[in-house]
Image (cartoon, rainbow, N blue to C red; front, side):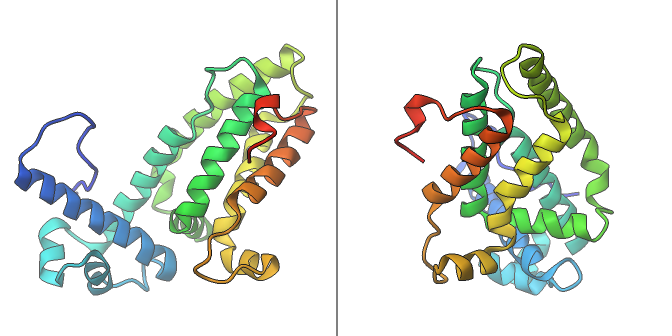
Length: 224
């Protein structure tokens, strides 16, 4: 399958290769958007090509099939989420770790709602394609669960179910992307106007921290 991933940061490349990678990323972004809106069956390669600024013939120079591009898009999402939303252990303060995690995850969801929507639609239809990548997700969840258990054992947070705790955070942080139309109606925010990310993140963070018996770090109280 044609890989549409970007070149490693810091690597050197020719202008031609750089242009090819830019086109491949444009194809991937266009595919994620089209698949999120219309699903695999409802998306045409013509629509993907148009969204990427290419002709259909140009698109097929870079991809083998719509189905393989769909799998590539999902694989990209899993890898990106694993890199962005790791449960950092750089701080010994659970409140700082949780605040940082929610902030990163929610801002990404608000800025790239189509990513959350595509992932959710694939899971809703049985995850037939995504299931082969569950191992990566499970490994990341197990690693985060170990961190959460260490907090519980040290008496730093109230006891929680580590796996359910993570899934509940996902539900809160992805809601605003997956149900954007409803959110905009209830918050009276017109299409095209940015949602109030600081307000949303602040409320979500307070909710999650309260479950753990924690308060926001003092340094964060004047921000989101």
